Image (cartoon, rainbow, N blue to C red; front, side):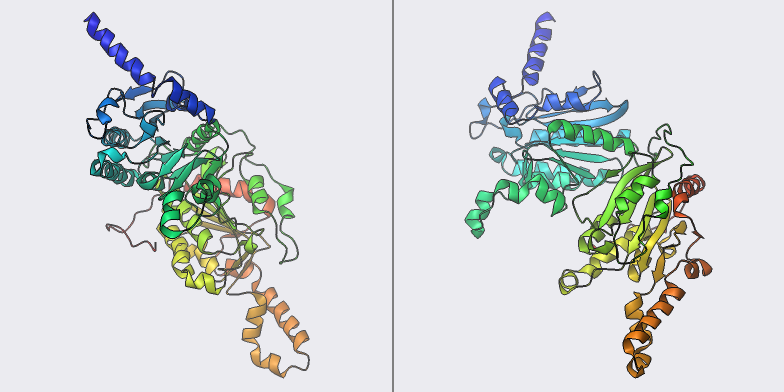
Length: 514
């Protein structure tokens, strides 16, 4: 027995050694932690329980018989984050470049299956050179096994992907199927085909960073949701994200002990919307004044900046925040912001987070490029997401809610539960200038002074329709409130809606306008 225990301990020590001292030093030289170091930062001390540490590949082709490492380049297991159970896997770049193999697939698939059965979140630390070429079709089929489970787990347990090194080819699809993608600036990449292949096929010359770096995917493609500077920052962000989310779709997110005054009023809110309708203001500042102090975590902050999607807290409870940002494109909806909002609303709905929408939107962005690129289809995603969501939905119209954007942005017709408006709200079919020309075309043509007549018609239209009281008259707005009271009004509304139950029509699924 003693000899056998010694043999077991030797194998475990080999697994702990990863790819060896030289490869670990190379990892550190790039400013990166090893897979085990990352897990030690992520998980509560002493909580990690590893599974599959001794698994190795069985491939003997192309010189692989002599390249067998316990664990085969991925560490899998369970642990806790701030006392909450999680499933984890971490690819080890020091072992065969973290290349994805059949054994890796088996280990990760096993962890995903157990996570779904246990109802706990999954955090994946991705650092891999891609599929293990020596395994041929087996490594490709291995990806498929993981993708299938990512889809099965979607909306059941939170899935967070941290990209902490290269992520190429088929490896990018697993993170893309998860709820959140976090990238590390300067050391992580995501792309289907690398710069060399692109250069040889299309003749385009592009750097690795410009093709698939963190900035590109957080600000332009929208593939990633967060960019951080270091491995440690990525791991800290994963912990923070989990604090807003439940363990699974059958639970509520944990409530923090209330640390902010429930009845706090902010006089600044009474002044935040400018008197001049054409002047912008910072919606992010408005949100900061309403929710619990320092509780906002923006999702996809650098992407589609004309919309804000964020987690926050009200009286300690997690909520999802959606808002138009007047500082960018006047807060108009376009293709990218529609995708951003729709995805976030669906994510909140999947994990039982109330959605609070702050509306200041002049409509959908006009333009030939938008129409040609399918703004109708993308804009319909917002409508679909709000209409499908069954969580508590509240809205606050702070200024403009014009045309189709009024309907799309959590209106009563989209199943909104409680709709508030500020006295500055402007709820109308179209803008005052366009409406006055349309309604008074003949009068303007016959007027002795068309400019003065147009000004008079605009003033009349604004007086009749550019206020929230007509909408309140017909029941489209539940209450016109003082801006300074917004926080307490929302908290009280959520108290009522916390036990909301809504049944859906029995069906397999709808056809989302992808």
